[in-house]
Amino acid sequence: METRPDILISRQLPDAGLARAQEHFVIHGRGEQPMSRAEASASLADYDGVLPTLGDAYDAAAFQAISDSRCRILANFGVGYNHIDVAAASEHGISVTNTPGAVTDATADIALALLLMTARRTAEGDRLVRSGGWEGWQPTQMLGQQVTGSTVGIIGMGRIGQAIAHRCAYGFNTRVVYFNRSHLKGCTVPATRLGTVGEVCAISDFVVIALASNPATHHMINAEVLSSMRSDGILINVSRGEIVDESALIAALLQGGIAGAGLDVYEFEPHVPDALKTLENVVLLPHLGTSVLRVREEMGQMAVTNLIEFFAGRTPPNIVC
Figure 1 (cartoon, rainbow, N blue to C red):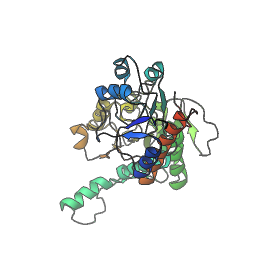
Figure 2 (figure 1 turned 180 degrees about the vertical axis):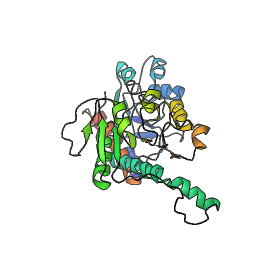
Figure 3 (figure 1 turned 135 degrees about the vertical axis):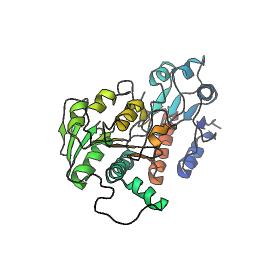
Figure 4 (figure 1 turned 90 degrees about the vertical axis):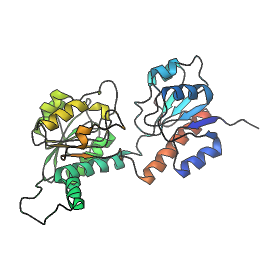
């Protein structure tokens, strides 16, 4: 009887993906917290493959801590894999896969939710009603910004950026401008490409960050970029927290450089600075971008498919390296 590969699943999967994985592999589970560097290193020595996810510490040091890797594949649950040092994995002969596509619509939806919540001050209004402080309708009460007919700037026009642009342009009749490091091919959304991030920020009512996290995008949204935004501008981030210099963002909010922010991700997640928590013009979500059962099920199936194909000697459909 053929021995089935030992696979560590770093966090609980939706039932359908877990059941399918159990049909093909010997599955080992663990807790619900991200893996430490020591745990990540140990997993490389102890298992044939690992299905990790956001926050699991597969950095360069985790790979360097082992002399020989039993693990042959990291089948990441998620499109973003900035928690995995891909170059180090490749040096150790370990393949890396991800789950693109499944997260696009759900993440675009949460971007629009944040945009609307921040523009129309809905979280602030909810707190007012719950506190008992609402005294009835007034002509000038909690005036916000109108999204329909506004200008939305998108930084990063990959799958998610284009899905956001589509919702804005066709759902809210907005003008869409964007920055992307490369020219788009086959984009069906009416949008204008500008030369720099600063140019996009300078003319946009709302700036939405939809970039992948990598060394080139780390702190791309810094004090200089934030200073180019309009004082009534609102920043939305649904990508990765480290793309925004959080200290610079807090300073811009406190000094009135920008009007507000809607955040689903944070630079040192899950830590959220108290300065952000106390600001009424900031909407904070607990990384809900892909928090839809159907989406998480699809992500799980994609990750398991990557494992199945790899151990069958075929190229996984979502190979990163």
